[in-house]
Image (cartoon, rainbow, N blue to C red; front, side, top):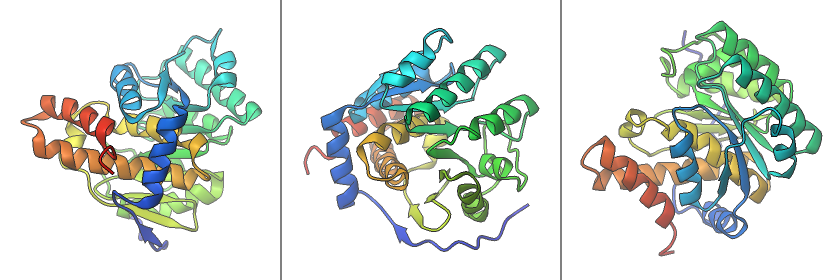
Length: 269
């Protein structure tokens, strides 16, 4: 069901937005240690995206180490894409530790609403107060209680149709909600930033959406607010995706060009 948005877009950002340029420079200077508990399909690509942007990725996933590593990491991503029973224990322990230590973190509720187990785990994870919840329209509709469910990991609703739900989820949880789609919307329930751009080919390459969640996490410790962190990551992704498509011959070369664009964006001012 489509939800009529009640929130109004208060700003729009595209590269080279001055704030985003500054935020990217700070990220590259700090190289924040970003702890990624993500799905097995996208681990390598996610690490390469973070390296290309200038962050320092780490994929520590064993339950014996996860709390210790969250304590030293500067940011955390939890992505439930290929969740198992063991993964769920790890994720819950990591989220609890992040709340205890004040480590900023991002929740990516992949396919929430489509399957009962992962939806239940996502609802438990939200209790540990993520800084940002990042998902497509169907995922955000499902997590906010407005329905949804999607087609596996794919959205069956537009980002604009889920904007009201994103705002309500932000107000309910205290998290910024980063809503991905043809236009990305980032909201804290009061302010809404739209990020146009990117290209449809980005939905045809495994790991692009999931790695956006990781980049948002990397920006959290180097930006003044989660809203700004999510906007900066989305702006950079959109610009890199557009530029990579212009040079790519298909999805394979797009993957390489996308990493190249992330690693060189802003280098010429």
